[in-house]
Length: 197
Image 1 (tube, rainbow, N blue to C red):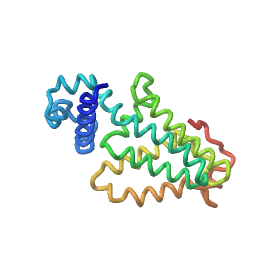
Image 2 (image 1 turned 135 degrees about the vertical axis):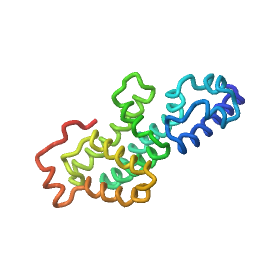
Image 3 (image 1 turned 180 degrees about the vertical axis):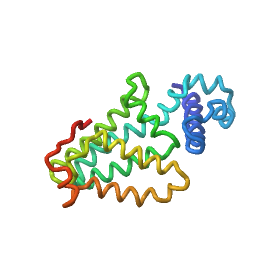
């Protein structure tokens, strides 16, 4: 890609990111083009569909979360790695309004441009969860799908203006519920996760 084309593409992504953070994933493509001071045809030349635009915005973040899981596994305790990754995942999912619905749909839709990234991200979190379960620091009645659902729930809170200030507190509550304690480990004893991906 030529330098000027790359610059134009990066500008469109920056404008689109700001618009989606403000108005959500259903923001009008025409509105994004207007904000970027280009014609709709120019936007569509770079990103022919809404999903192509969202894929360009989100794929890098999702792939970074997958890579981060590997790094955390090498340098952190299983408990710390799981909680740190979970927090980063929630932050990523709340960067753009409405993205949690998109993520959940992409997991199920093999034709989605985001499917592979979302599946890899969920698997990375599931691996960290299993690692923590194996050393007894996470409850055993959760699997990767449960973890992904908890990320979605916490991210949804971040999208609600009245509830957003509670997100950090509720993250801590959820994280402590995932980690094994006397009560939680008893609750999960003898019930291995049904699905770790």
